[in-house]
Amino acid sequence: MTHVTLKLASMLACLVPTAASAQVSKAMNGTTDGPAGLTAREFLNRDPAGLLNASEKRKGAVIEQLKAHQNVLAAEVARTMQDRRGGRISAVTAASALEEISVSIEVLQGAKSLLEKEPSPGAVLEPERLEEQAEALRWVSRPVWALCQGRPWLTGALKEEWAPILKPVEAKLAAVSRSVGVVSAYYVSPRLLSSPHVGSAVVVGPRLIATNKHVVRDGRFGYQDVASGEWKLFTTLAGEVEFPREYQRCDGGNSPAIRARVIGIEYADPSPEVDFIILRVDQDLPPHVRFADAPDVGDADRIAVIGYPGRPKVPFLREVQVDEIFGTPDKKVPFPVSRLSLGYVLPNDTAPAGHHTYDATTWGGSSGSAVMSLVDGSVISIHVKGMNSPKEGIGYNLGLSGAKIASWQKGRGL
Image 1: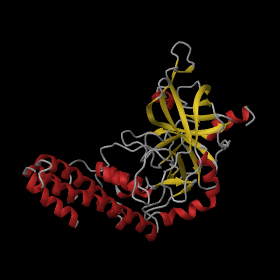
Image 2: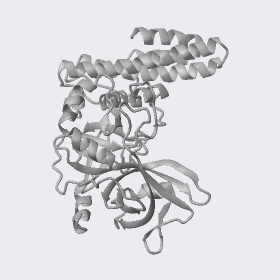
Image 3: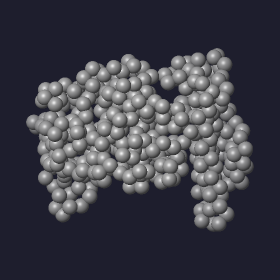
Image 4: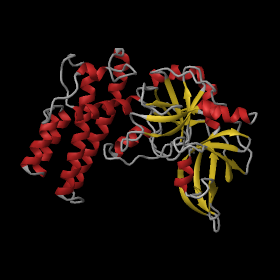
């Protein structure tokens, strides 16, 4: 065990019953009950980005990110113990929090060990533990950065790896980011905010934006008529889109913002399997994005999701870890603001026809984002959803191929 987990185990021994304490200590030591699982070789075959076979420099950067997460968790342990000693929380509350933190630290340590020393090809790994460690490697190695005037505000150990990848497409990235907006909803009279952040949207033509049908439905400003199947807008609530909404304290200032109200539904794909809708707004917008009509997408190609992920509320990430993932260089964690989520195309034979899968870190609010290939800067997809709920967006995301949007644009001479 690491120094942190040894110290944490001793704290727990003072706060929780012996049986529970022993269970936590057992987990920290890497011993688990249950059936045998995947071999190390099978695990390596699930790593399309080649992280486990990467250079020592690249592994080192990811290990630094893992350490950063361990450090913020260690600081949370210290705060929890201070709160307990000061009588601000009960022994039961402290014990529960420390047990949850210990599991998070153990997962990070296991992921770190996988990078530092690859297990022998025949070594058998316990399935649940392996899944948690693989997830940790993915979200730690897939950075999320705020965009300032369309440029990523780089932070953390991974910026050295990704900066040269982003450099050749920086002009295209800046142009696309200006044309990706955040969708909100409000009551019309009196004007009161209803949902401050329901999704993202992309400009696809003059006063026209593309998003997902579920963004309109979840924002409660539109619905599908049961009898006719037609999509309609409500009269009491309205959708609004802001292009772009950048962090107010961005380094170098902000791009000018445009706010537009949704006033009509131009097109909704009739298939329930295709989550795609075009909305008309009441203001002129930034230039429209041209989607690739024949996206050249290869397994393990690097991609960028440009949109407005919301702050995640999930059991497997502590709040301090969320801050570490989404924080800006000035140590703030603003939501929702324009962000760049980086990742890789994933091979997936079970994906629906006309869709791409990838593993960038997306969350609620990312729906309707633009997905750009970092190979040539083309926009290849519109983000639809994460497929591995409740672990939305970490390992498996679904995007509608840009060919669908490009076909619609061509049909209208755009």
